[in-house]
Length: 92
Image (cartoon, rainbow, N blue to C red):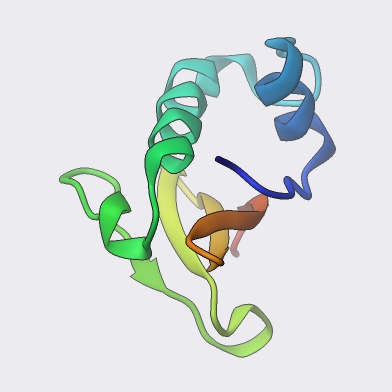
């Protein structure tokens, strides 16, 4: 079960399927990432080839990131065995 999604467009995409608010070219990738997050209970559940799971530091200390495309990442943390504070960010 997914907790809070910070990015408004990503939250709407997850809840309703609307692509307004996200880059529609990323819809399939984001759908796959959200589905994987939905069944994950710890960060290592997201460690599958091609996602480039990595822990973050600094302002995102305690968060993890997976690749969407280019500089774009989905970042999240786990609380009570569920992903929360999910965001879509351009990290550069």
